[in-house]
Amino acid sequence: MEGKCSKYPDCPAPSHCHEGNEVATCEFWLANNSKVETKKEKPIKEQKKSNLPWTGEAFLVDDIPMVSFRSSPIILGIVGKADAGKTTFLAMLYTLLLNGKTFDKFSFAGTKTIIGWDELHHKLKIEKNDVAFPDPTDPRYHRLFHFALRNREGILKDVLLSDASGEAFSLWSQNRENTNAEGARWIYEHSHGFILFIDCQDLIDAKNSAKTEITDIAQMLKHDLHNRPVIAVWSKSDKKEQVHAKIKDTLKEELTSMFLNYTELDISNFPTDEPDPIVHENNLRVIDWLLSQIIQPVGKELVVDLPISTDLFLNYKGNE
Amino acid sequence: MNKQLLIIGKPHSSKTVFITQFYIRLQKGKSKLKLYKPVADLSAITAAKDALVKGEEPEPTDAGRSVNMILPIQFNEQQLDLYCPDYGGEQIKTILSTRQIDKKWTEAIKESNNWIFFIRLNSINRQRDISNIIVTGHHTQGQTTETPYAVAEQSSLIELLQISLHAKEHDYHLKNSKVKLTVVLTCWDELETKEKPRRVLEEHLPLLLNFIESNWLTDKLNFIGLSALQFPLSPENKVKYETEGSENFGYIINADGDKTKDITELISEAI
Image 1 (cartoon, rainbow over the protein chains, first blue to last red):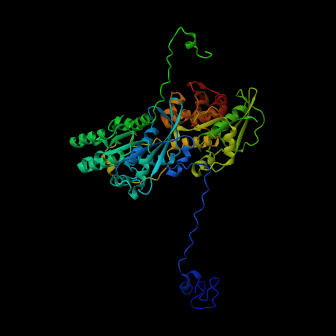
Image 2: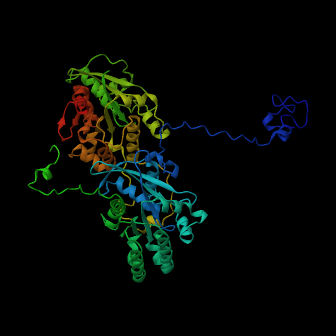
Image 3: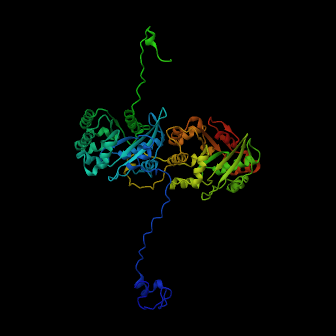
C-alpha cells in the first residue's frame, strides 16, 4: 500500500522507521513505495506571448495576410523533384544578400521571415570545414519565404518564394489531383512565375529517366499556365559538363518548345573562382528575370497628336 | 516635451563608455553643450566613471541591470534629452529572443524622432559560408556535425530595426522621413581604417546597410564613427588618462571622414 510500511501497518513512516532506518533505505518501506513517481508532465512553462504580429519564421499559407494587407505579394513557385537543390537555392539567396550581393533593380526593404531565412543560411555556414546543407523539406506542408523589395522608383513589392518538398511535385506530375500533392497544387495555382529545377547531378546519374521526370513536371506545369513566366535552372551546374550532351540538348529543346515565356540559367553553390558567376550572380538573376517578366512596366503615356489647323474651332484646347 | 534622442544598442555596443565620457566632458565644461539640470540618477555610470578616472577600461555593464539613463542637454536654445532606456541592453536582447516589446520601449520609440543606433563592428564575427570560400571535397564529405543554430548578427540587427519601425507604426510604402537615424560605429579605433563610416558599414554588414538605405530618406540618415576612449587603455595610455583626465580623449568621425575631438558633437550629428 503506497504511503505505508509493508511490514508494520502502524509504522509511522515516513516520519520515523520501526527498523531504525532512514525511510529512504528501509526495505519494508521501499517495498511499498519504490514505485518511480510518475511525475505529471508539467505544462511547459507558458512562454510569454510575443506581441509582435510576425514571428520571423517562414510563412505558412495562413500567414500571407501579414504582407498582403499592404500589397498583393508576387508569389514565385519553386518546382522540382527531391534533392534538386530547391531549398539550398533559397539558402543561397539569403546568404548572398548577407554577403553584399544585390538584386538588379531592387533594394532589400526587409523581410517578415528573417528567422526562417537565417536558419537556412546557417546550413551553409562552414563549421569545422563542414557544410550541413538544408534538411529535405517536410512533405506535410509547404512554406513561404518573404522579401520586401523596393524598386528604383521607390515602389515597394512583396515577394514570396515557395518551398515545398520534391515528393509533392513528383506525385503531382503523375496525377494533378493526388491527395498528397497539396503543396505542389497550391504553388501551381497561386504562383505568378515558376523556377523549374533541373538537377545536373541527377541527369548524370539517372540519365534519361531523370530527364523524363523533369519533362513530366514541366508538362504538368504547362497546363493552364497562360503567360506565366518559367525559368529553368540547371542546378549543380558546376557539373553540367558531365551531363551527356544528347540529354542536355534534347531537354533544352523540349523545354524551350513547351513554354512561351521562358528562359534558363545555370546555378551552383560551389564557387570555383572568386567571383564565380554561376554562384554569385546567377542565383539572384533567377529572381531578377522572373520579376522583370511579372512586373510589366507601366505603358508609355499616351501622346495625342493634334492636327494643327487654321480653324480656330478645331484648335481650341480648353483653357490652355 | 523635450526632443528625445534615443540610444539603441545591443549589449556590449559601448554605450557605457560613450555616455560616461560624454557626461564627464559636460561636467568639466569641455563641450559647447551643457546640462540644463542635474542628472537625476547617475548610478548607471558611477562605476565606469571611477574606472576612467584611474585610466581603467570600464567593466561592461551588467546586462541584467536595467537602468534608465537620461542626460538633460542644453543645445543652443534647445533642451534635449539623451535617453538610454535600457542601459545594459538586456531588454534589447529580450525583445529579440521573446519577440516581446515592452511598454517602456514602445513609448521611447514612439516619442523619439532621433534614433542613435550603436553598433560595435569589431565584436561581430565574420562567418564563413560556402559562398565566400572555395569549397573542396573535404568540406562536403566529412561527417556532418550539426552546430546549434545561432542567429547571424546581421539578421538580428535588421530584425531589431524592423521591430523598432513596427513600434513606430512605420508605413513601408514610403521611405522614413520622420525619424532621423544615426548609425554610430563604436570603438572606431579598433577598426584601423581610413574609410568613411558608411563604407565601413557596407564592408561589414552590407545587407543591414541595404535595408537602412532602402527604408530611410538620405537626408534622414547619418553614419558616424565613434571612439569614446581614443585607444585601448594599455599601461602607457593609462598614465595619459591619469594625468590628463579622460575628458581629453575620444573622437568622432563624421560622415565625410573628418575627425572631431569633441565626442559631444555626436548630438549635433544626431539631431
